[in-house]
Structures are given as C-alpha cells and as structure tokens.
Amino acid sequence: MISIFLLLAVIYFIIKYGVDYVRIIVKLWHMPVASPVPFFGCALNFFRKKDEDLLSELIKIVDGVDSIANAAFLGPLCHVFITNHEDVKTLLTSADALDKTYHYRYLFNETNLLVVPGHVWKVHRKLLNPHFTSPVVHTFIPLFNAKIDIFVRKMRDCIQTNELNLHDHVHNCFLDMICTTTFGVDLNLQERNASGEEFATAIDNFSKIVSRRFFNVYLQINWIFRLTPSGRLYYKSLNILHNMTKKVVQEHIRNREKGISDANTNTLMHHVVNLLEKGLFTEKNLYDTVEIMILAGFETAAVTMLNVFLMLAMHPNVQDRCMEEILRVCGQDGDVTGEEVVQLYLIDMVIKETLRLYPVAPTIGRKPSKDIQLKNHVLPRGVHAIIVTYTVQRDPRVWGEDSNEFKPERFLAENIAKIPYYSYIPFSGGSRNCIGPKYAMLVMKIVLVKVLRKYMFYTAHPLKMCDLKCAMYTTIKILQCSELRLKERSS
Image (cartoon, rainbow, N blue to C red; front, side):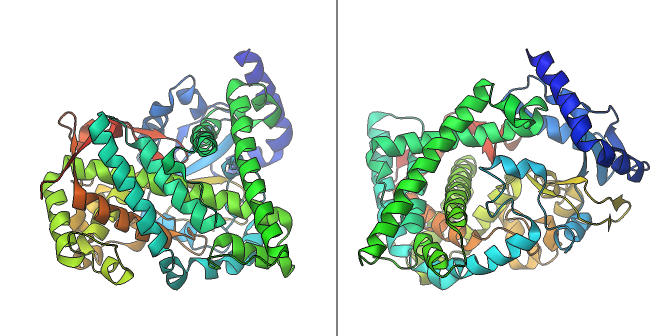
C-alpha cells in the first residue's frame, strides 16, 4: 500500500512542481547538496523512522555537508538548510522572505497567522500587536498566580500518590492559563474536567502528526493523507479543537449581544471580536486566530517548562542558586508581582539557556519571493529555505566548544553582548517573529518561582547532557523528561 502511495506522490509532484523544480535545480547547481537523488532524496532517510528519530536524522543530513548552507531533496521539493547566523539574518530580515514554506499549512489551514502570505500577515499582525504588549500581558498576572497555585497543589498530590509523570499536570496548567487569557473562559482542566482532557489529548496528537507530514512524502498529499491512520487521527483531533473554539466564540458573541460584558477586556477573544465588529476581521480570521494562538501559546510554553524542570534537575547547583534568588526577590510565600519578575535575572538566564539548547521551533521555514544573496550562495525564488534553529543555536564557532552544555551564564549581559543576535532565535527573528515571547517568559518565570519555593527537582537516574534524546514534533520534546522527579523542600 505504501509503495502505491509513493508512486502516486511522485506523479502528483511532477505535475504540480515540474517547471519550478527544473528552474531551482539550475539555480542551485553549484551549492553543496546533501542528497542529489531526485524526488525522494533525503526523504528515504526518514522512511519508517520513529518520531523520536526524526530530529537526529535531520541533524545528520545538515552536518553531513561541510557548508553553512546546503541543498537537499526532501521528497520532490528542493530545500536549502541554513545553519549560519549571517545567512539567518539575511533571510529573516529580508522583505522578500516573509512567506512561509508549505509545511506550515499543516497547522490547521492556510489562512491562520502563521501561514498567510506576507502581505496579509502584515495587516493582521499590526491589528493583533496591541494585545501582546507588556502592559496588557501583565494584567494576567493575578490569573497566572491563581492557576499556578492549583498546579503547585497538584504536584503535592503527585508526591503523595507516587505519580511519576508530570507531563499532564504541566500541560493542563498551561492550557488552563492560555484558554482563560485567550477565551476569557475557565476550562478548569487541572480539576480533571473530562472535555478538557479530550481537548488536551487532541492537541498533543495533532502536534505529533504535523511533524510526520513534513518528513513523509506521501503524507503531504491531502487525499492520500486522509486515507492513513495518521490522517484520520489528525482530522479527528482537528475537529475537537474546531468544536471547542466554535463553542466558546459563539458563547462570547451571544454574551456581547445580550450586553453581558467580559470580566477581563484584555482577553484576545475580546480584542478579535472587536476587530470583527469593526469590519477589520472576518469570522474566519477570528476562528483561525484563536485556534493558532492556543496551539502556539500553550504547547510551546508547556514543553519548554518541562525542559527547564529537567535542566534544573540535572544541574542542582543552578537550582539552588535559583532558589536563593527567589527568596531574595520574592520571599518564601505569596503571589508574584510584575515588579518582582523583572528582577529575576538568573531565572531569566535559565529559561533562555534552555531555549537555546531546545528551541521552541527546531526549524523555521521561509519561501523567498525573489532571489536572495546569502554569504556564499544565491537563494533562488521559490525554494524552501529551512533554518535549522537547533543547529544555529549550538554552533561552536559562536557559542564555544562547550555549546552542547547547559550554562546559564552565557546570558549574562557582558557575555550575550558578544554573541551575534541571529545566533539566538528561539522565537524566530526579523519582522515576522513570534508575537508572544513576553507572555511566555512572564508565565514561565512565575511558574518557576512558585514551584521552586515548595519543591526540588531531581532525576530518577543520573543524566548527562549527552544522554538526552529529543523527539521532533511541532516543538522539541526531550524524551528523558519522564525521568523527572520532585520532592518537597524542608522549611
């Protein structure tokens, strides 16, 4: 069956991309090539590979060619993998490289903020920016404190019941927070709400399958994808997300029509409904925006938080120093304030160093609308340029020979001043960067304060950085996060 799918995929791509295929090949003739095999190329490296092997295979391909930019056929389409910060800067700051690669359309549809063409994105981003300013984000601090208090209590339950997996609790906490601040609706997931459990599971399945489609040629054709088990699970998960979003949006609109005001007018829902009523957004824009913000805001922050916990567990001396800073700045108890958050310098460095080693997005894709001159090569119009963030942020020529080690002091002001800006792009870069880093950093800092006050992290078995293995979904997930353990701090 798979061989039939592959044959159909080849025929489909020849018909759809034949002319562009030849033009790009000519343009890239002198660029180092990781795999010169037409149509399949590097896709064969990923055939029948497990989810946890996808990232390591990608790194092998990128590192297998001694060049800061190299071409590879991942299926029938030619990609250029970029690992040098100078080329990253050129690409991300170019007005001719605002369009995303085809892979992003697997995130719901082609009309959400992550995927829309550059000229559409500029308009939407300008309309949404006011919701993500520091003053607005800081209005959510009381809500963050309340939700994280529940999370802290749930962690105590984990200790008492000897529950070993923190994954569900972390995800439920972050999904609770993003839905309350996005929808203005409390799903109460941390209290084991059944519909919420289904919602969280659907997003988890969705993120895994999106990554599989990038590496599997035949899964990139929609009608073939729908026939596969992955396709059926993807659309089932997508329907759960659509239905949840639709239900909450309609409830919000009904309340507005009845004159029932929001408790918090800073929610994204309130903002985009205002845009809808002013004629600046369509109903489709509204639904797309809310859905992509949930996935981008919840999944990325939750995964990063687990990665931070693991880094602290593996580096107890850093964890002790974080606790000292927390006691000095925030005290032993009480809610965390915005004024205190900005004084948590070590906590900030710990999160940034974790994001350097395990970036939110392991790759960033752009499709130039014109030829772009890189350092050593011309990037042709229409090629699929893939910035391998994971490799860029571990470049020993920039970060030193110990670039694979966890060292938060890299982000001391005197050290980071020596590092080229585009060597560190966990939230992408340039004008089309991530819209929510202020939100993400704020909530993660508050989580760390409240959790570390009460608990110590450690690992079930001794772990070194070289022992860690990552799975590549829409985000990077460290498999050894299952080794995380915690115990209550003595007073």
